Length: 292
Image 1 (cartoon, rainbow, N blue to C red):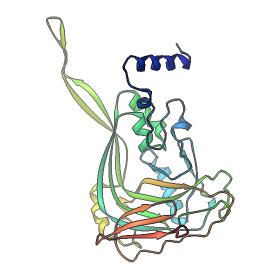
Image 2 (image 1 turned 180 degrees about the vertical axis):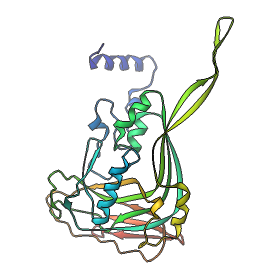
Image 3 (image 1 turned 30 degrees about the vertical axis):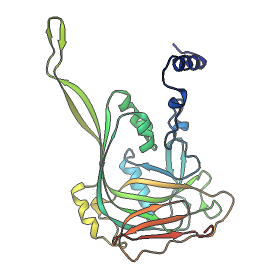
Image 4 (image 1 turned 120 degrees about the vertical axis):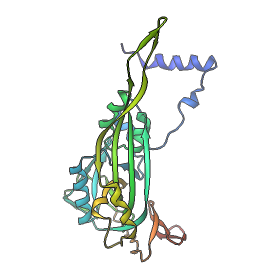
């Protein structure tokens, strides 16, 4: 049975008056993208700024198409409602440069849809069914480097070709290897009864592989790779994509990031700048100095 929305409002107000949680605690802001169970488009709101998402739900064919497009130049995409579409016939100036990182391993455990849409907005709808069934998602990542774009802004007047649906361009691609698993809880053993009370068996956890790309044990070799060599073939899967919206109606002056001559261990890409930590611990930044 469906209830009018106003009944829920009355219910929450009564709960607060009875000493329950205050309404501001129930409506506290969350990190981007917004989670809203009322609609997928609202869940994936980019708020006009940078968008970051893991791509572990994407098929090998889709990730391969993204990698191929990045080798040709700046990747222009359509991003709307948690869906990302690469536009291979839309051309834009620019190229990506590889920066090797000390291999970094991370494990993410996702237990609810709010966390899912925060970490993997692209393709989250395809994974949400696992969480609704009471399962958890387990993601193992090994990051070895990043392909960063040599410019930080792109206007819609600088792109050409089949670009009518273009909304964003890819600013960075983190690469390495990953494993995406679903973790199911199950009762192991039989169930007994002691004076009418049920006694269940031990709870076991069963892991099922959903997707994987790259070879974790081959990623350590990436630490000694140069910018020209790029990531090792066995550890070059696209793990995470960063995007920025196209600037509307103007052709901005390109802010070109100089090719690094030293090894960097960490890179951060902003709206109009790129900062990195050198191997010696010192920071270096490149970007637009128009406002100081």
